Length: 258
Image: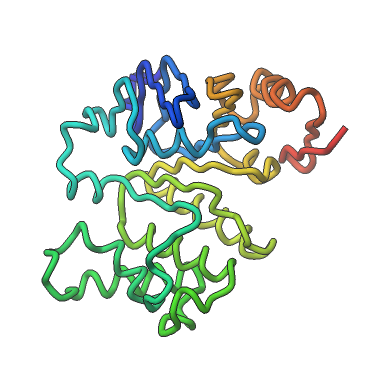
């Protein structure tokens, strides 16, 4: 349970991830609040993507991870895929698929492997592509799209799952400022609807719009707290070796180099 007694969306105990014989992530305890947006931040090499993949059950790991109060290993694949959506980096194997078909992959957990998409699937894909402003290139192969266009299609695929929990690894990569603002609005709409979002972000200014910051350093949890808390700001400055400063402008925190 979280400090307020609510069931966390994701939790981990004694989580260890080793890659190439080296321990990349070492987190003793972690709870991601449900119905909030938590941004994962930290310097390069801190283990942010590795942690996210372990929480998504995409990497072998030691320890326990729970999704919605239930051990990940107890979830059957299809129900788990309906409950948790993943948006990653460097998608391979889908370059020849039309954008529409890529987004429709997000509906696989909701239908049979050989069955044709139903009306609900089509409606979910339609809504997700329009929401991410990727509808106009629905008939183009993913490999022919720009980096920013691909990101919006991949976001649409994650949204089409209509899951309770969404994990996103660097979702703002290749997006220009207006589409980053659109993404922020989408996340806020999801949280308002009761969804949980956990995202790895390099853009610290955007991360400070989140409800919570999960600060990593050398694979360990340096801090987890509200973005408005002084302790959170202190942890952020510490992991970046005091090379940044935080300032409040129009009720929003911004990050400047020092």
